[in-house]
Length: 311
Image 1 (cartoon, rainbow, N blue to C red):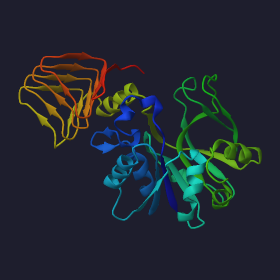
Image 2 (tube, helix red, strand yellow):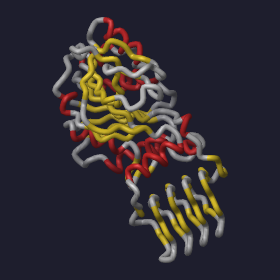
Image 3 (cartoon, rainbow, N blue to C red):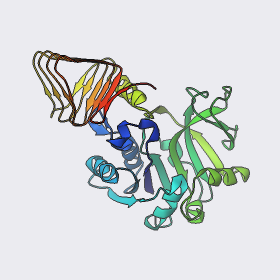
Image 4 (cartoon, one colour):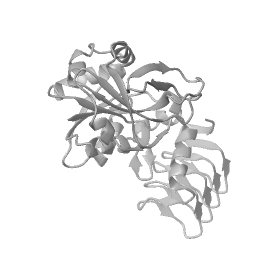
């Protein structure tokens, strides 16, 4: 089976961080955000994976290549103009050889068991991998019938139901559906709806964890949750012996000066923290230096300036 990693978004909600770094390329404990989706496709047996790119396309392509297995044939499908969630797949179908396609998202983090998804599906169906819904008010829901068919796709804000599930971004698209996808540009939503009406949109409940990284604040929360109260320092980071790093991540090429304190924060993409600075509950990203003795709380600091870190 072939794979498709969707990584061509604009990252509007991640602004102003996404003006500097493409969301799929954001560092998460030493690996790009897209790594979990790419590795899931590889673990599912995909030996050819197409990654579509748009904004900061070179960053996304480099990030994918940095974590792809040497056994994987990685193909970059550049989209100078966005083609949409369905159009991107349609534009890549020449590489799929008439087979089913396993699709993952490159802008979320997950640790999911896809065996149920791999065992499901026919050539004329799409099967969605879903998990128990953590918050139907915040995210849309997939309403699943007892026989596994999708009854409805419910916008966010819905009243929770025992049949409401969260779409993880993983889906198996049957070969006949791939071949019939409308020419780009286009979204996958109308394709889902047409199949749903014919009973050809199904869902399987899988085990595992799913997390979004939609904004700078939720990116920070994702990294800190994965740390689980610990700290992480990349092997190519420099931390002065008198500095203190607690419940924080310090990425590749970053520098923490003497006497600085970094807590509840993510320091990434070559950022520096000056001597004696105190950085709390913040994201510091890019070629930027927090001044010696500065005090930052709840901030996003990039070369473009400082911004309040709000969800």
